[in-house]
Length: 277
Image (tube, rainbow, N blue to C red; front, side, top):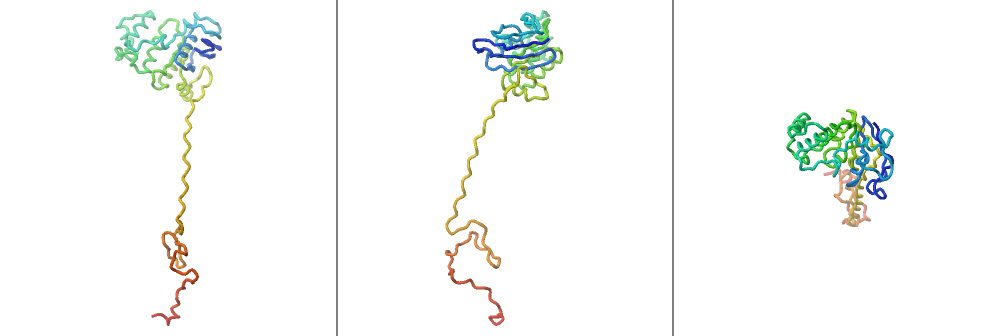
């Protein structure tokens, strides 16, 4: 099964959804970028055959057939459309979905189903408090219980928080089981997925521009060294002819008591004074 969206848009001037083209197919998981509060849900509705686009075309295996799209694609966790109320217990959500799937839907059936999936201890927890990865796992497993479902359109799993690799791995597992998977995400999640090379995250609608990186403020210019005081040289100590060091700071000629015109005395030769004492 192959689903293709060709230049679909919604709203005047594409306000609800700008022109978008993408493809996804059986046995693979793809993600598509949709920003703002409403566009992810609008894109999910159009991709699953539940909303008619104002422009463009949606096809399944080359044929424009909205009824076939609705029969073979489940819309999962779309805000304000198919997402459960956050205050309903997980067992209540499961019971309702089991009823839509045409199987036993009593509270006991719901608890047993959750126990088989490994989430029995969460039955009485409101779904709004469920870990994001567990939420996606449960809702996707419930969606494929419906007869004829061959693909899932998962809307904005990143809005629940958590690490993208959690729900992306789950989507990949469903693709490995033979389902066509489309995951609609926001900009930050899309950039993260494109960096996750080990998960082979493929964007169904083209490359995603990286998020802008703030430019750091330039480092302040270093302050100039202070000028040395007159008569002082802030260098290495002076060394005289005999190797003795002068003061820590050199002293200029006019700062001494010695007359600059008088030569400094040389070392006396002991023989000139009678051979010493």
